[in-house]
Amino acid sequence: MKRLFSLLLAISFMLIGIASIHSSHASTEDDVHFTVVFEKEKIPKNANELIIGLGGEIVDTIPEIGVIQVKAPSEFGFEATKDKAIKVASPTLVIENPELETIPMETEKTETTGKMEKNNRGDQQEIDVASASLYEQYQWDIKRMTNNGASFEIETGNHDVVVGIIDSGIDLHHPDVTKNLLPGSKNYVPAGGLYGYDQSETGDINDVQDRNGHGTHVAGNIAGNGQILGIAPHIGFKAYRVFAAEGGAYSSWINKAMIDAANDGVDVISMSLGGIYVKGKVYWTNPDTGETYDYGNDVADYVAYMRAAQYANSKGVLVVAAAGNAALNATNKKEVTEFANELYDDYGYHFVGASFYTPASVPNIVTVSATGPTDELSLYSNYGSGFVDVAGVGGDYRTFLQYSEEDRVDEYIENQLYADEFNLSSVPVVEYEYNDNGTIKDYKYLYPGYSWYIGTSMATPKVSAVAALLKVKYGDVNPYKLKTLVQNTTEDLGKVGYDEHYGHGFVNAYKALQ
Image (tube, rainbow, N blue to C red; front, side, top):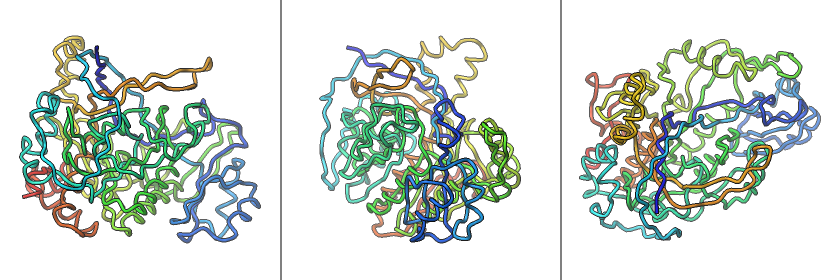
């Protein structure tokens, strides 16, 4: 039997995208989703009456941070901001996975049970490195961040410390990750998925099975324990599924997942995603009518996002987030605004003023840049003084670009050169059944698999795992102290001291635990 290895050559980072009401999946002009942020961080008692009076309908609520999602006519946002109780209201953004170019490779399939293995022990256990054949052969990234496994001799984690992974779910059948999967994972994807066309999505809160792969890949980087190994092979984790097979999610789902993870008592939230927060004028043009609306100085989704991150901090949770994959100096506000306008122009948005990547501007967040096999900043990684906190291995594609420019991609693949610069981790192998119109009718789980990804998405979970190990070592430390521990136990790369590429330095589990 053969197992399909997928080499994902595009950067695997959940880049903020935006789907306007005029997207291919959109409905009518009267079916616009808005994010509404109230002035106070609670929902007023008369919120329903207020929204109905403005011609809208509440479809989702996040009471802990004073945020709701509303379905209403396109002029709703402009009218809503006139009310003193409402801070900002604008069309809801959609966070998207980028399109991934995949090159399949065949290799011998490793026999697995194909069943979820439950192991909720909280005690330290030995790691069988000799049996982790894929770790030994391919996981140069994990070896780099553990000093060739030396950190495993000090600490591998336990189930008393928990990482909340906000992503595309988890492969419930993958033996490399289910050993550390704890009860309490949740699904936020509603029936029909993002656009209502995915019939495999029923809205079951307990349906956390990964259809996409990204979430299981992230989990393997954190807590893999089988053919692959993660940085913390015995740490507990919960999966908060916000991405479906189609790869998109309303930002409100992500904010709710952050709130729930914090309320569930996780210690670290790992988020391989991020966005752009605009301070200045925000304009939106209705693609159906051509009418332009002035939505004030903020994008509602990012105000809500920052509130959610601050709420998590207040509950004692450290949030670790990706720096992003646009190769931008994220502290150059003009450059970020230009990038935002280029990215969002087709969807009706135009920004004037300063823009920031979030959640880097939120206190007690750890923002992670990515490095490649030679410790250089990855070609795609965002950077910036005061923006990046630390760096971790995310892989790179320097060799791939060289071979691509020389028209030698086949040689690159044949010689498995990707194994020296991409990151291998766990994924589910699934196939989809489609309707005649190309929408998903159902999916079939085939078997647990592995894939190579690159991106700050891969660096972030590794740093999250080190933060969790430090939490195991030092016990009841608050997010500020835990962030300080992560920063102060790094390797110094680049310029001496803090610099714009690596922040406070490169995170190494062995050095941190010493």
